[in-house]
Length: 261
Image (cartoon, helix red, strand yellow):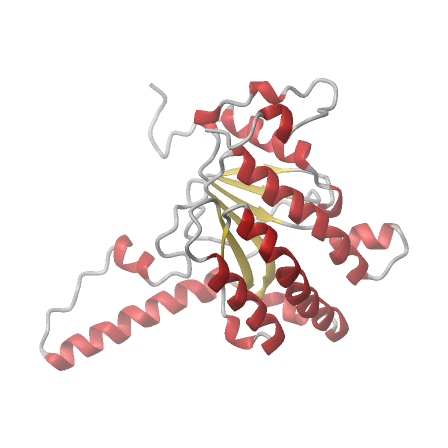
């Protein structure tokens, strides 16, 4: 079910793109986005990379608004990976400040739209300013019942899976010490230790800037996700690019390892 009329969500579609072809029952429950191309966008304009990250904020804002209006239940955005610490120090410092500043500036608007904000990743390594901003967003929106916005920050899927394995081993050692039965390891037990515990797996993964790789993102969760890759650089990604991804998704035949009926 759409939360707003399609003519409001997509008011001036380009020629050949019909928002009314979008079927509410085929809107993906969970969309995950690998936001790529900020640096290249800046380089094309002879700007420093941080200018590209700042330009990408509007694309984030529009994608959140559009996903919520279109009835997406969960939107996950890949903001900063565990590997991104390898970038120049001034870029990393600028990104951390930008995360904090943007989150605090946007949280009231997200709250008004009933969006629930949560983070996935290891926040312990973030600067206090950044950590406090994400914590504030979580506290303010935690009881909202609209779309869930998951911000993946200092996130790495391999790290996440190791985190779950470590939790399982600790619990097994504790159980053996106390004489309790050691639980069998199955998918449900493993998933309880993931950062995304309790959230649905992504149905659709969008990657911008023409790259064709998963970049250590949601490796367990995207086992049966549909992929949509576009050459559009992230700061240029708008609601109509998002619509193209949704329309492409709803044309897919999702079989989950079975065969078509």
